[in-house]
Image 1: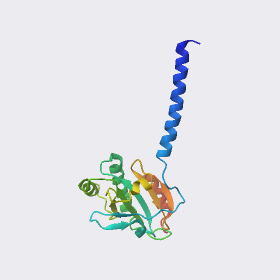
Image 2: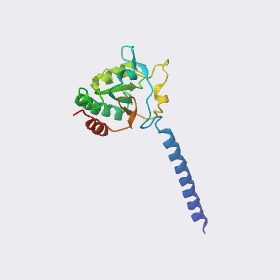
Image 3: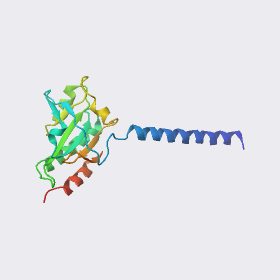
Image 4: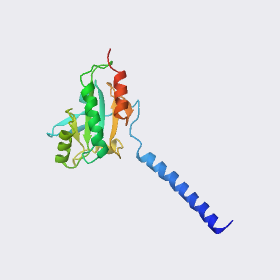
Length: 180
């Protein structure tokens, strides 16, 4: 075999090994901390006025736990779709009780940028909290959120029924759970 061919084979082998380990690292890095069927833990974070809100205060409803930031283009696009979804389902009774709620956790360090994004995106739900305070328990890390937007759909009992669903998938789940 010529030296050139040996070099090409070795280079391809090195690329394959690097690709495999890169993929495994990426998979571990982006694996949610919780999966379907697990119970969600409570979250306590400050809202726009500094009052502490609890995720468990929404128990009894289907809740979308959303991690986002004002500087994230895909998040801002998703906010528009979630606003439409929230408007459609916020007052619709669900089979197991309650309605649809959204608990939005912003990762913004800049409070003005966060507040402006809420206003500009017309995020009409009141459960908008922030996880950027230095005194915070860093909820995003506890949920293994390394890329945003990231979401957890939670049923009325606090059990996860969907992770990183698109707004269209969330709408499908909600439509099936409407009380007849």
